[in-house]
Amino acid sequence: MRPALAKFYDFLDRPLFGWGRVALAVLVIPLALAFTAPLWKISMTAPQYPKGLSMEIYAHKLDGGHDGRDINEINTLNHYIGMHKIDRAELSELDWIPFALFALVLLTLRCAAIGNVRALVDLVVVAGFVATYSMGRFVYKLYVFGHNLDPKAPLKVDAFTPAIFGEKQIANFHTEAFPQLGSYYIAIFLAGLAAITVWHLLSGRLAFVRAGRQAAL
Image 1: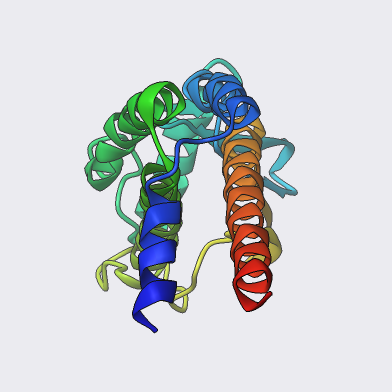
Image 2: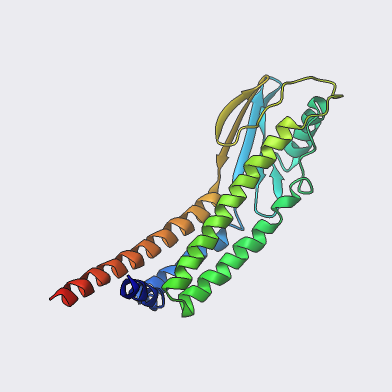
């Protein structure tokens, strides 16, 4: 058991393959581009809004459709049903996301330059946590918006969860929510990072198998 663990720890300390370092450096590009594109888009249509209303969520800001006017219109509608005003202040809990993405850029570049397999595994764990926690907080925040309604609001509606992924009918509004280019950039980074890690782990596994066969001979 101990020799096997020693070999595993030795493997974790092995430098990354040359192509792995290059791939990590390239993956920084889509990760950095995630700052420039919306992560999610929520849109709604109703008979009184045939052109629809929309809101795009970036890592650092909210952007309403029709030159930003849609956010004010959405907040006016939300006021009548007692929903909290939607603005960047209400989503202040998400302010850490730009810093987290920037930290991932730095960690990825560090791993590409001087990292080993251990650093690569650590990077995967951190990136997975950031992605999972960010999505979880986003879903939770939307849930709170739809369930923490003012009982004194002019219009009474049942508590609801806004559309998170896909389509949903809320009163006379047809709402849609889908990931946008920024989320796809992050997905490319995560998928590439996972592929590089799996390749290194499989290569290490094959090395262990060969070493074991040679020892048996």
